[in-house]
Length: 302
Image (tube, rainbow, N blue to C red; front, side, top):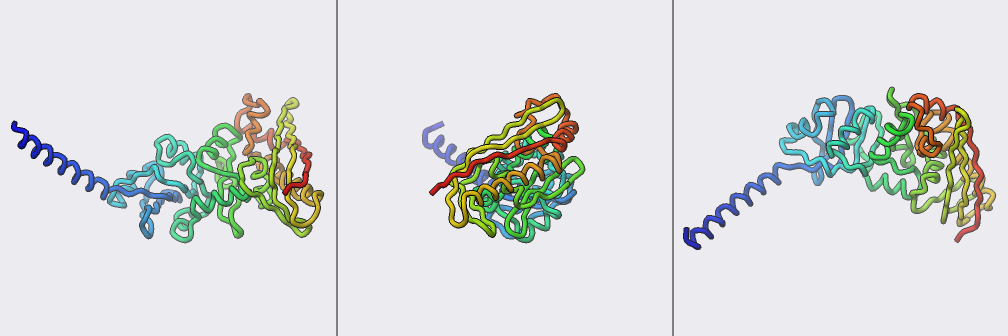
């Protein structure tokens, strides 16, 4: 074969490969949000209006949605997963198969598909709420860690009237919603926020620096939890004692509502206490009988 014929042959092959690749790209869809309500799945595809729905077992995603969309679903770009289903049933398979990223935001909704079709929160909205200490971050890997390594109770982000709250789920389904004070206390304990501003009738302040310490120890079958640390606050109104009172109220609510009321281990208490010998069911009972205390110091910041 002459050089001229060889160049022509290569040119034809490259053209075929290019055209095939373009067709393959045109037949792909990259959803950024997925909703699961029973056997109804819906996705929002990046850059498009509306959603694509499919009626199937949730574990048949993404094949069933690909068939409904008429395009192969590239699921790795999903940043928000909305659930009206038990997360323990959905998350292991979705994470193991790479259908969602470990950092995907997981949202609780009474009707996830209806939420996706109305005014769904974005991943940016949820991250902004976590950055300002409204809620602690609740990504897919965190939620699954609660289910497998904690007490079998986890918390999912949920839309609320003034932003977001946390919904608790166990093996039986939705089991309660945490009040705002408990959500903010958990955000303080997780310490993964950028700006934490708090206010009530007596005070308004911003937490400039916080170093909470959580200790958990077993005394027989009794769990003792203690929270301590120093919080540096920039006061806008009120006194440091007012700030200490409000922060203590939030921390107490976080422990009483999540731990002793619902038996949720959202703070790695089992690991902190070295209580791996308990089953998840037994550990939940231990949590609900736990004793706790808070002892914090508030200092003046900028």
